[in-house]
Image 1 (tube, rainbow, N blue to C red):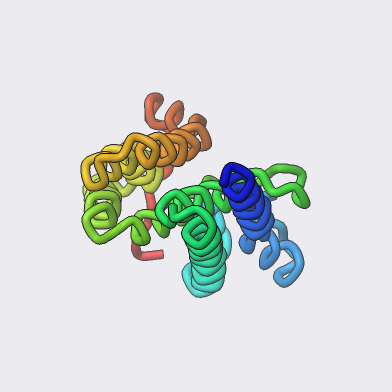
Image 2: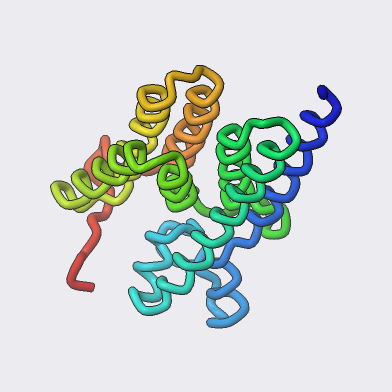
Length: 207
């Protein structure tokens, strides 16, 4: 039983991480558009910087690909840990978490990736409509009121473990969700400093 659990976790972690490493904003900008997104703006390979550099039409491809790789990781984790260990929810969280880690620190791109917000948001949907409503609702509320994508992302990251803990009442799920939220907050440390000093850029909806 223990061996099955360790094997299932290991497979989920490795497969999800490798899927996460397929950072589509880098792939599209560097290899298709011949203009690496990391050479512009904030230097980050995330959605917000890609949007500011290349616009809304091209970002749709990045969003679709990032959502699909997270969905794949979550489903793979749920299947493997559900089938071998009877723990599909832990599988969802592990799959999504390590997909996010791969997205943030892709081994084939010098460990320089995005901030994992969309991966976290996709995970919230798979954790149930109540979790998704809290996380996405808070994200859009902060975004609409302040036009700071980073503030919306940070608010959602803080809300995620609380929402999971409230809905599931399970300390293992809550800890994994806390790691997810903590990673997103960590990746936004520069944004936090800019917010504190009033230097953070606002999202221009008309663009």
